[in-house]
Image (cartoon, rainbow, N blue to C red; front, side, top):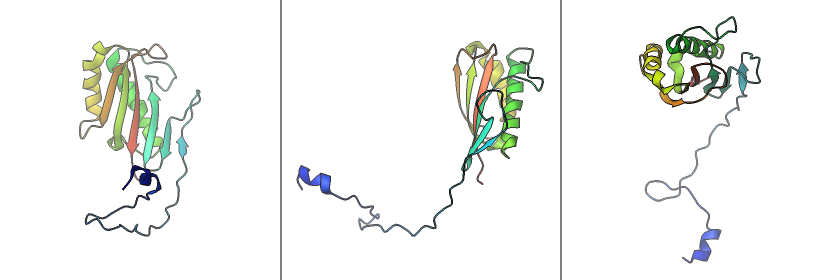
Length: 152
């Protein structure tokens, strides 16, 4: 085979034995629309379902009164995780459905205390997690976003 022949080649899937694999006739699956749950005073949805996944926007330590909770990293982490739980519930999910979280801490020195509170909410089969130190958009110590998996 010449290098010039490669551009005209058609790639065909093959079986383990090298024979050409014939695609199975699949029933056409209906496309599920994106669903948004909850309202916010900023342009975002607290939770969005896309197929079997639910994406929870970054939750901050704001109580039902709309104010940042008083206290340190322990109190703020508890409030944030309660807010994650509430956003998940809007889409019919629980904390057990969470497969990935991303956590932003204002101060890396708060990691130990944060981790202790976080572990109480994910004691069995905890999700994958990324935790970084970052300057946050408002004067808070933590923000958490989550991805949940719950087949429709």
